[in-house]
Structures are given as structure tokens and as C-alpha cells.
Length: 172
Image 1 (cartoon, rainbow, N blue to C red):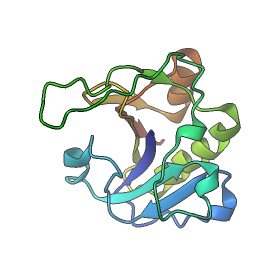
Image 2: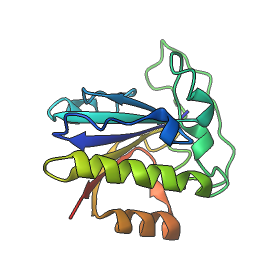
Image 3: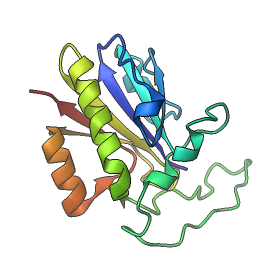
């Protein structure tokens, strides 16, 4: 169950309306991810975070909130192995490192692009992070600077984006 989030650095609010998007969104005025991969990094920042979720969460945001329906799972095909975990054995294989790259489904790219642009426009320093966190992705988180939205979509379309990566983007 992947999480996808956008952090607008030093922003005080994006003022998003759920009705303007086909995907589910939760806007929070504290940079706190739903997952822990980039927690230490985000707690040193200020701004607003938008959690992006499956369309069926638009009217029910109280339980789990994930973005698996936004992902083109056929882009990097493979069977996911869900391990049996022994909580007494810290060396147990936990299932990470099974998938590394992903693409968004075409029908959701417009919404995600719109959210990134709003986040950049709302950031006084024109800086945004696009975060991905997936338990079957790489074990360690990675931070990459891509600079522009155009460069992000070029990489997305040509080679896919990396799971468990935080992309740093800047506005003009």
C-alpha cells in the first residue's frame, strides 16, 4: 500500500477543495507523513503536506489512506511476495526490495500535476517535495533533486519514478 505525498515548503496553506480533484486529498498544516520513511527530514521543515489517495477515499478519509489505485502496476511487473514475519527474529526478510520503479496511471497525472503546481505556487521559496513510500520498495529512502515539474514528468514518462524516494522540485 503506497503513500504519495506533496510537501509545500514554508507554505501556510494550499486551500484545496476535494471537489476539484478526481483523486482523494488530505491537506495538513504540519509536515507529517502518514509513513515514517522521511519523518526525520520533514520534522526539520515547515509547510503544508498533501496526502494523495485512491479516488474511493474522497468521501471516507478516516481509515487507511493509500494511493495504490493511482499506480500503473504493470509498468514494473512482478509478483509481490508477502513474507511471514517472525517478530522475534530481527533478521527476518520483510519483503522490501521487490519493486523499485512506478508510473502514475495516465488518468491521474493531470490531478497530480495540478497539485504540484499549486504547492509550488503556495511555497514562498518555490520548493516542493514529492514523497513516495512503499513497503515493498527499496529498504532505504532516497532524496533526488529534479528541479522542474517538466523534468519530473519527462523522467516519469521515459523511465518511471523510484519508489521510496523524495523528489525535490523548484518553481520558476
